[in-house]
Length: 252
Ligand SMILES: Nc1ncnc2c1ncn2[C@@H]1O[C@H](COP(=O)(O)OP(=O)(O)O)[C@@H](O)[C@H]1O
Ligand SMILES: [Mg+2]
Image 1 (cartoon, protein in one colour):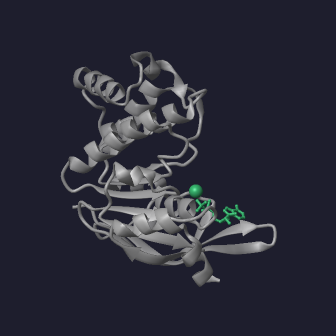
Image 2: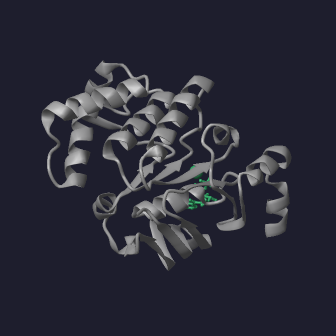
């Protein structure tokens, strides 16, 4: 199973002028094995949603629930959420100087599985995942995200996704800043993950172009901290043609 249920989620951040509400009641269910796309203009709260689900301390949950297969994610620590099967690919992946990709992946895999992966098969798996993402084998020895190009960061995130094998992946603008070749490779990474049994994907994106390669079951338009409209893949086509204007105007 891999059902992610978000109900009436309200989230605020601390600002100099006090708490500011960013998410204003988000309700959304990603059923077992489904891929949902969230599309919305800049500043609509998409990254806030991703971070809040993953447990970033900057965001204060003021209402609502988030469950994964019925378990309350919001009461869990960040590690517990990962062990429960949640994966977040951040819009701006952080640099971890001094920690190699190989060590990072092994530590993450060990933490999630509760035991270290068997060395012989693990090295093969890591090399295989790197190769699929068109990353050079020497890439494993580099510090995590340090000096990576935009495309390398995103392809590295997809290698992580393949190796850590979560139940649900939240991918925040994994398509941003990619050239067409990298976009295809990253999309293949997402699709390979989707083909495994019962995997859920929440694909947050600003542009429709990735949806040509990764076909969503549902599309949600996100405006001003809320889902303004939900529909099938045809909704993405409407956005491609007309932009967010209709939804933004309706929300003010
Ligand atoms: N620490 C913060 N202080 C003030 N405003 C914030 C803070 N973090 C996020 N915001 C605001 O929250 C809104 C949503 O941001 P974000 O979730 O990054 O949007 P998106 O990912 O859709 O572009 C924006 O208006 C942003 O300025
Ligand atoms: Mg964002």
